Structure formats: C-alpha cells, structure tokens
Amino acid sequence: MSKVLVIGAGGVGSVAVHKMAMNADIFSDITLASRRKFKCDEIASSVKKRTGITVKTAELDAMDVGATVALIKETGAVLLVNLALPYQDLVLMDACLDAGINYMDTANYEPPEEAKFEYHWQWAYHERFKKAGLTAILGSGFDPGVTSVYATWLRKHKLETIRQIDVLDCNGGDNGKAFATNFNPEINIREVTAPARHWEKKKGEAGDWIESPAMTTKVAFDFPAVGEKNMYLMYHEELESMKTHFPEIERARFWMTFGDAYINHVTVLQNIGMTSIKPIMHNGQEIIPLQFLTSVLPDPSDLGELTKGKTCIGDIATGMKDGIEKTYYIYNICDHEECYAEVGSQAVAYTTGVPAMIGAAQILKGNWAKAGVWNTEQLDPDDYMDMLNKQGLPWEVHELDGPVSF
Image (cartoon, rainbow, N blue to C red; front, side, top):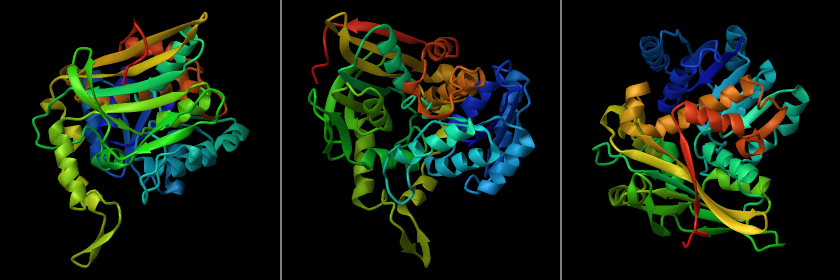
C-alpha cells in the first residue's frame, strides 16, 4: 500500500491530488491536509466527481511538528508531499524524521524574515535522512524540478558535459485581471523583487555569483507556440543546485517572462512599500505589508476558468559530445484551457502539480528511493521523463545551430 500525506490545499496541491487519484495503482491512499480544511474538502469533492476516488482530508498547522507526526501516524503515510509554503520545509522535514517517513517538496526553504533562496538549510539534513534510511527529494515542481531533470536527461543522452545552461520560463496566458500572480502572491513577489543573480566561472576557476538589480536585464525571445515575449534575468534555486551537481557548468541563468503591466504594478507597489516583508504598525496591530497585499490580490487557484493561452518552459544547454560542441533546447508547451478541462486548474499550477505527483511516484516506485537528501538532477531521469509524456506534460528536444546569443 502506498499511502501519502499531501500538505497544502492551494492550486498546486489541487492538481497534485487530482493526478494522484488518476494514478491509483501508485497512490493507493491519499490524505490532503491544510490549516483550511474547507479547501481540502472542496478539492476532495472535485477529485471524487472527476475520478471516483475518495481523498481523505484533515486540518493541520504545518508548523506544529507534533501535530504533523500524529497525523502521519494516523494516516499510515509512507511519504509526505509538501506543497505548502517554503517557510514550512524544515519543520515538515523534522516531522518526517520523527515519524520515520520519506519527504518531498517543490521549492527550497526560505526564512520568513528574509527573501533568501538557498538550499544549505535543507542540504544540512542529508546525514540525518541517510542514517534513518529515508529519502528526501527537494524541488520536484517544474522549475525547479523538471528543468533540472531535463538537464540530467540531456547530460545522459545528448551531452557528455554542460558548459552553459539557460532556464527559460514563459507564461503566455491571460486571465483578464489588471494584476494577478500565477502562484502564491507572497512567494511570487518576493522572488521577482529580489536581486537577480546568475552563475559565472572561467574554466579551472572557482566561479562566483554575478548580481544585478531586479528586473533590469531584459531579452526578447521567440517562444514555441507562444511567440515573442520579454523575459527578465532572475535568480532561481535550481541554479544553485545545478552548478553544485554539474561542476563543469561555466554559466547558469534563469529567465522569466513578464508583461509591461505586471512590471509597472510591481514597480509601483515596491515604491510605496507594499512589497516589504518588514513588520509595520497599522491601527495598533503589527502587519507585514506583503502579506496584507497578498490578502487583497486574486487567489491564483481561482484563475483557472479565466486563463487562456499557453506556457512554454525549458532549458537551452550547450556542451560537448564526442569532441563536438552541441546545443539543445528542451521544453514543454502547456495549454491553460486544457489544464482547466482536466483538473480545474490553470497551467502554472498544473506544471508544478503534475511533476510533484511524478516525483512522489518515483519514490513510491523505488526509482528514487535513495537514503539522504537529493535534488532532482542527482537522480535517474528516464522514468520521470517518460511519465511527463504520459501525464500531461509532453516534452520536445531540438538541436540548435549554436549557443544562445544573449
């Protein structure tokens, strides 16, 4: 029996649980928990209508290790799938160690008081999970997650080394809102307002992070099935893990598309202090401006029915094969309306929730059942890549004439 406990009832949690129910041969028993049990119940009702599978639900404060351990024991889960906020990663890893079960998430830990996206807090758990004989998989969303598996698959089947890699994330969808984020507004805005960083090193040298102000490096790129969009250089956590696990990489960058209206709104909100994560006093009560802003912005999980268009996310990697330098572009195209028809979600949640299910399946199937803490690029990519094709995220790979010119 493969019993799983899923924490988090947002858009990604909804997609992941729907897809788990559609793969009942792997996920025999599913419990969905959140501090808002009514959201879990709504998702469970949708799953029942679409698949006939019953998903159990529970109320849980994920910051309470004891309560999480008790729920793990009550459900008999062998795997905890963390689709909650990244602030909760460490306490949920602690709970898994206490309860003796495996762990998986889609985004690295970040402290609530500082927008700092680093893996070292979670990598520090490696020996504890290894000693316990338990598996912890970090970042099995799309980016990070699929983009890292893409790199590993290219390195296994198309390239012997990777000299440079660019991760390109394009959302060509339109939800008709004046301003809305595609995933949790607090996390989204923390990411886009943080300084941009990319990895650079010369052959034989140690390398370093190159930092630039947020949203100042812009490149126009013609995305398959979407068209030309402006993409901006950002920092994203898979850069840290890929440059660590592929030490030959000389340059690693992450790009994400934003429309002019989005940029203008974020700029104004930042200028007036609404994106701050420092507490302020309001009517005698301490609040965090960004968290207040999040409460008045549209809930991304409610945007599925409104969103039209496609996403295109992938890697462009250059490296050597048989003494010849080659460049490949590997990517997925996902349609917002098709995602909504299948699971009631827009494509941004879909492209994270489906890989979450696939990563969990890799653990339950034994393919990634390796004691310790691992990023997805450290593990065998083949069955994961095969499941992407079968589970709604088919990929394409094309050889390019040469490295990117930007």
